[in-house]
Amino acid sequence: MRPFFLAALLALPAPMAAQATALAAPDSALIGRILLAEDRRDSLDEGIVMGLRHGDARVRTLALRARARIRDPKFAGRDSLPLLPTPTVWPEAAWRLRFRALTGQRNDCEAIRLALTDSAWAVRLRAADLVGAPCDHDAVILATLRSWLDALPLDASRRVSGGVSWHAGAHALVALARVRSPDAGARLSALATHRQWQVRAYAARAASALADTQRLRTLARDPDDNVKEAAIDALTKLSGHTEDELYLGALAADGAQAVRAAALALKGSPRADAQTAANAAFDRWVARTNASARDARVALLEAAGRPASDDKPPARRVELPPRAVALALGADIRLRVTLSPASGGGSFVVRLRGDAAPMMAARILALVRAGYYDGLTWHRVEPDFVIQGGSPGATEYVGYAQFFRDELGTVPHTRGTVGMSTRGHDTGDAQWFVNLRDNRRLDSDYTVFAEVTDGMGVVDGILEGDAMASVVEIPPRRR
Image 1 (cartoon, helix red, strand yellow):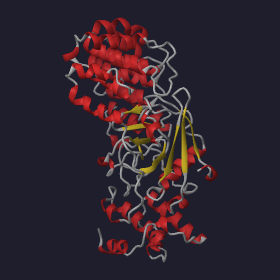
Image 2 (cartoon, one colour; image 1 turned 30 degrees about the vertical axis):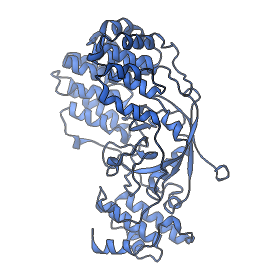
Image 3 (cartoon, helix red, strand yellow; image 1 turned 135 degrees about the vertical axis):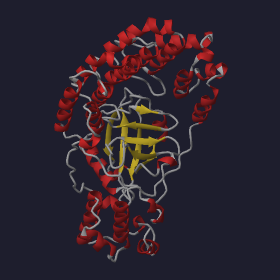
Image 4 (cartoon, one colour; image 1 turned 180 degrees about the vertical axis):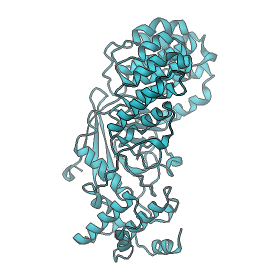
């Protein structure tokens, strides 16, 4: 860190949010210019120079932070910034301790048997996922898994709070495929055609464990692109390039996740038409001008025998989102996330941390106001790590069309903080993840843009596939 930077930081007073003095319009405009310069990664912008010389400590802090973030993508000097308010401290649910203990008990059939009847479904599902060879003859465990499978309803689109819908049967199917293949094989046909796509995706995992390539070929043509992806990934491992005709057909899929899986499967194909087809598909995906489809485009380039440097991402739009300046100055803006009644209902509240990530927080707010998140799901649930959601395709490979810049700062990834999903530096795709435990190892790579302030128990109860009925800004009168 340069001496001037350190000296200027040490001279700053209390954090910006504590200063109530209103700024004049030109000063607010200058802050907007500083935020835009940081978003463009333009350290030479005159706005930063003006900000560094400004009489108001808030403006100087924003300019100093902007310059530091521009110069260092990992922002190693972040700890020299004035401290920001710490996130809410949330106690952990008691069941999470039982969840963690299971990892070391995977060979203890008595512990697995007990966990399959736990009061928390997260623990039960974890126990099913850990069933392995040491317990493949345990009559109680096998009977429990069969009962879950047989209880899976034809309409698994709804669940009550604290309960499950498709989850138990789907996890049981994969577990039985590992340890009791006849039981899984007898039930696979019905689940591979189940109306709930998540059940069909788990059926693909079970078919992989059973090496049922015929079933996987059918699932690789499924109408849902997440099912396609799971089946193609499995076929790639089991059959390699013998299924290249199927992979070539999957290049026409609408979802980036399925196209990516097909392209990776085609890499090194002996077929003369594989590279031509991959090139044509790459051009189609370039024409979509969706930054978050980068993984699919790069996979297509690899299948075409071309380097990733040939990628043609869409041009970045650098615009100052509404409320960005207010958020940068510490405005208290909160959002209510309401789960669908079909997902057990309930709601939780998050406060945007514009004091740490003003541009990201403001862009999230703009998407909320446009209804972007309404109806989207939490597609990734790791009960002792994070939940992640907000993808239009219910997958990490489909996100918002414009990437968000990282805004790494001093707010740590503690339980209840909300971070931005990325797949590399400056690739925020508008998907949220909520930390379910302290995940400080994420501090150096992922931006915290919000924190849960109410309803953490609802967050803890979210299961894979649960949908957000709505995400709305809470009017001040309702806080």
